Length: 572
Ligand code: 4AD
Ligand code: MG
Image (cartoon, rainbow, N blue to C red):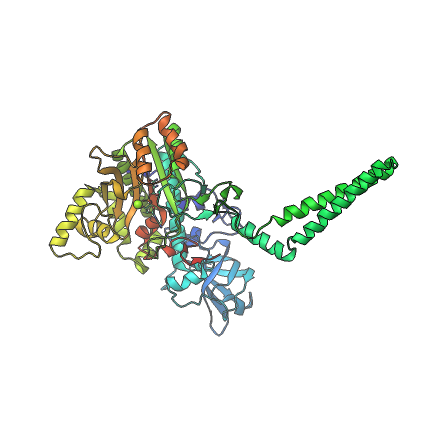
């Protein structure tokens, strides 16, 4: 990865490039009146070289305690800029200490950095001279006490959980992986394309989409309105019709009696008013509560987009249209799947990185996927080692070694047929799987993990899957049984990436859509890409949260996305 070493370390950039220097010479946060704690404790000397410098810091108290008969307080302060805390010592003469010490309190302090007494673990501490801000916490009510909390417990407090060491480390690793993603693709001249969140095409053809509709809110609104203001009855309408007739008769009488122009105009105006009133009543009498129907089906022409629309399951189809003119592109955004999966690897809303490359085939696709995953691993080793060390200490002793191994080891590449043969051999020698192994099955997570964790102990790319278990857009191979698909399997997670060479032949893809029982109409625009200037192309999708699971060793995908959405839960 020699050529990558020139790229800027993400978090160092935040403290060395963008920062101005405080009056004391310590780099200050830009747009924020303080020195980030990282600029002090994450220095190679742990901050010792800054002794004597005057700084302002701000953060949240991790642990606080009064000491020496309440003469002063020790505060372990963290501002999220790094896993490390800065120890702040505040004298009782400087501030009332009681509101400072509860865990979770926000404190900003001006003070002088000093070397601590010999034998203490920190390399520098801050002697507070002035407390400039206190955001107090009532410890009796604060939901995150100092004791060790399980990740499951923390899911009930998604708004406060970034205060914990684990979730803040995950947030920094997630940020680093996003930065690394853009760096990798930009470095390789891929163009970043924003694909839509709302779409009318089902990319995977699996029917697992969340529908986007205003028909339900409109129906709710109408129902409430009709309760408040009931529609006119038949009698109301009859009475209004009678009034129209009466007023019409009066106009006729006045005209035949040659009444004055003024009299006639006045009665014509009255007639017009009654006619308008009748029209309004007739219109309201047609209002029916509930969702509009036509021919016994929901009438989507009355919906917001005048047709059925959904949240996207993948930006692939749309990004393909940009690849088919801009050549190398990628999209990176949230995707949504309404599958009832309660596993530790599935979310209803997750982020996907999807490159798409023109003039490229399955082999190019695998090369790109492998280079990208390696780049991400090396990036974390180069830029997030402190957070990775925290993860290794608390969650998964092997996570750093795993990153090193993946960054430096060529991925195994085997065909689906070979993979099934290896699994069958394993079964013969006594390995028990819950799911049956035979050619044609969709590999289950246990199969994928056996291949990558037991058999090869490194990432494995499985390619050329049976066409029956893969999406319609994958290129049909010459055997007419398999498609040019590839999945990247990694230890700890199983499937990290799914991709393929795309079917570029118009007739073949049209037939595949029909064979899968999908309607052609929503895909006509996609077929245009094959009708007009078709090109060999390929791409893949990397599940961003799966990458985080792989990197951190955290067990449940709900803990590596800030606000997890899964069946039964969408907090905040
Ligand atoms: O294999 P998938 O379904 O592929 C696609 O969506 C393609 N359209 C991508 C492309 O070729 N541009 O999903 C890609 C990856 C999976 O390998 C997995 O890592 C992740 O997305 N993924 C999920 N992650 C979390 N929760 C879910 N419910 C996921 N479903 C897929
Ligand atoms: Mg897949």
